[in-house]
View 1 (tube, protein in one colour):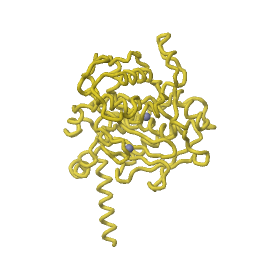
View 2 (tube, helix red, strand yellow):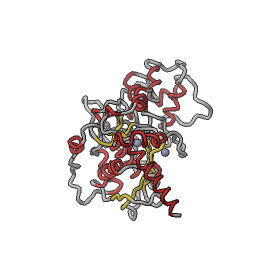
View 3 (spheres, rainbow, N blue to C red):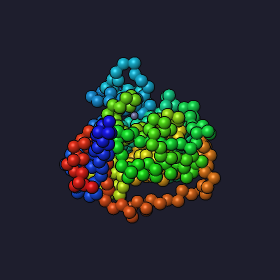
Length: 367
Ligand SMILES: [Zn+2]
Ligand SMILES: [Zn+2]
């Protein structure tokens, strides 16, 4: 029996060490398999070939673009497969999409629209049950003076689900199989703090995964909830509305855990905390916002860091939960903190399966 416990303990240690093997103290040490990923095509890059494609045209692959719009709620489920035609349905979807992302509402596949479409983003839909929630129908006031106005554009899930008043001290836990290091867990602690600063909610890490209110896990590909991840870039993460508490992140991304992500040499580097703050917003009941500075804006460019709540996010979350009694109306930024302590970005690289082998091969080299 003691032997079995010992074997399990060693196995846990190996797993724990395996994730550590994917933290790189110096980006010049990134092994070739990660650099190869960096040059591989992101899942939506193929859509760039539709530049200038007009309504009425038929182009091979347009059905995939329709599937993209279907996934994010802009086209309802088709009774049969989507056609390759640039039909009215696609034009209508494009117009709603352009409105949501503050683009010129042309219904055309212009360059700016395509650039936005291929950008990495959250896997949650922008339009739920056929109702566009992102822009709250107030987009007409955009661009009238040459800048974006500051009207609130936060949104909620249909039915406005929220954590009830007797469940506001929430616990969170990490998928044990990921064997995350304390360094990675601390990123989430910091992300939760952004939301607890402005609301009465509190978040405490719990050891028990099964009984935690919020569960966080990295998964690759199909992971059983009908929302498969798609490899490097494309969808980065998704989270469920209250009170599900499930937060899933794409384990194939090149997650940057600390350091200045904007200086990352790998073009596919994604800032973990930026994505975590966004997904926690979903866990608490916020939908997507059309305000580009808002945390709840659906997309984020790689090598970008955005972790501070915007007024739009704060207004939305405080409508659900009220304010933190200690909140003085300012989320004093300590964005410099990480930059000054960081330096070279550290990665939580992809390929969970490879980690076991890398633990042995790279463990002593990178740690
Ligand atoms: Zn989202
Ligand atoms: Zn999932």
